Image (tube, rainbow, N blue to C red):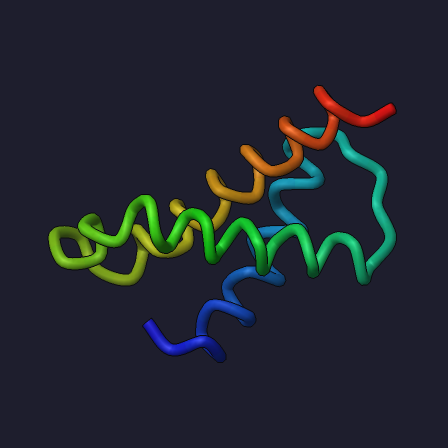
Length: 77
């Protein structure tokens, strides 16, 4: 998956994930969370892309971002 696609999907996924997890974050942090989540989700759920197509990439990115937010909330401070 091209890096540019991960960045675009990651930005959208970060926005969705921060809203689902009720996490207040700045725009830059939201995009960063989404990009990191897209990378994590892209690596973990890469095989789903082959089976179900691009839709799985968005699902993986959202799940990865949510996992990252969960770790952040659990271990901050």
